Length: 288
Image (cartoon, rainbow, N blue to C red):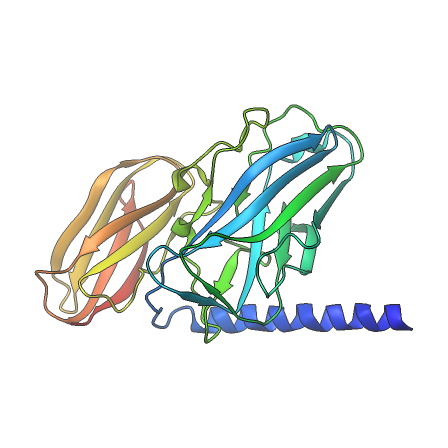
């Protein structure tokens, strides 16, 4: 009976996190708070021929950030399985957060992709300049891993995606703030230290951050293939006021810094074109 109650409680916690995730989507088009943080997959290593291990670290470089819930999701090269069966787990006691990554831990096959995921329930951790370990995670294979490149990448789309919520449970996810950092040479594919190596699975323009801004903001976008990219800024009258980017870019997640120092307060729109085709447009607010 006690074991049944524990399972029921875990299901309730996971359902509550799913509700928070849905709520964050409803608020994702509203104003984001000004938040600076970095989340990294790091210290990847092979424990033995059947076990890969890595850490996930979070810190904030400029200000204290309140994080109330999170879900982390990774895509990877399934060729490493080599006919075996995988188990993904959290190493108990390895987290330095009060809100532990103890919900939704596992391997999920959703929307045609295999993803490693873990999540927290509702809580509150204040993230500052000292790096905190979200947790250590292990990927166990029933047979030895192949020598294929694991190629772990952050996943920001689909039902099981990476997302962070702030103190009011607002969506503060900024894909450009998520990184894969160097690891030991024996594990290929885990030595990348630039977000441009995180290859997304969709072409997408993202919400600028922060928004409103004064006078600086960041505009991010995702490319699945290399393209000639043009970013244009328009005022509320439809007049073009700036072209922050007009160049060839490789696949990945890219971020452009935009300075509106010369512009008056107001509502502006930015458009992204890839190979002369419109990717999308979004609204941003310059507020002095």
